[in-house]
Image 1 (cartoon, one colour):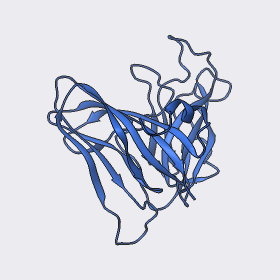
Image 2 (image 1 turned 60 degrees about the vertical axis):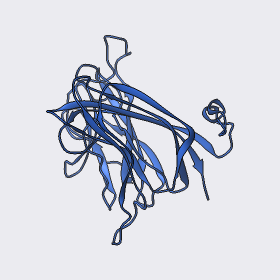
Image 3 (image 1 turned 135 degrees about the horizontal axis):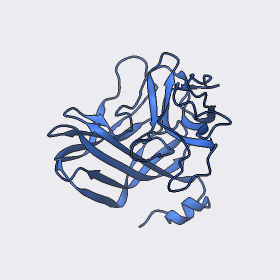
Image 4 (image 1 turned 180 degrees about the vertical axis):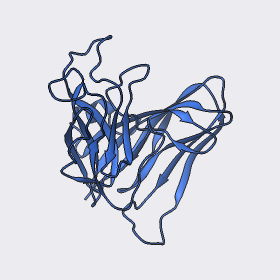
Amino acid sequence: MTYPALLDIARGISRGLSPLRQSGQCSTVADSYTPITGLGVYRTPQAASRLRIAAGDATNAPGQSGAWSVQIWGLDAAGDEQTEVLVCAGTSAGELSLHSYLRLYRAEVFASGTYATQTAASHTAEIRIETAAGEDWALIENASKSRGRAQFGVYSVPRNQRLFITDFTLTTDSDKKIDVALYKREDLLQTAPPYSPLLVLEEFSGFTGSREFEFRQPLGPFPPLTDIGFMAASSAGTAFVGASFDGILERVL
């Protein structure tokens, strides 16, 4: 590799560079292109919204055995990255976030009432992040396992950074053929036409199984304020698709 050693970037000793890891799965991919997230959607509004934890299981609340709070990361109305912790409220919706979000690309359980093990999870049932109007933005699943984090095979590049993708991994049901596309859309702050287009960068038709793709030189650069990620469509019925990618974020003025 000709770019800086990834270990140095992960350790934070390569000035102006930081690592990125996005990983998502979607078990409800149908015959139309679907973002690879736990919800099967990635919200890309033109106006920012305050978010909250939706009403859910009674044990996901402070003092109970489930999740007490969830940390979220995303972009504000100016395209700068921001993060905060939302408090769970059990069967009631939680308080709205202090900040408004234009994009949300990461959500993880922050505090729990259970010391997690292979049989004891950090949260009970699923946890959804929503707007005050009830529009779902993220899902922390609890089906076959309690994941503790939302699934996002997509990302939005903050205003003061640009992204290089070093590798990605795709996984699908072994008995179904899937069409998978890596796409980008620049200038996410645009509010009036002409708009920047949605472009397919890499496309895999009839993909099945699992494969890792690594590049001699990274893909990019993807400029600040770019939505980028994976979408997929199934050739038959509903399918599972996983997509993850590693990248390097470079700070720009």
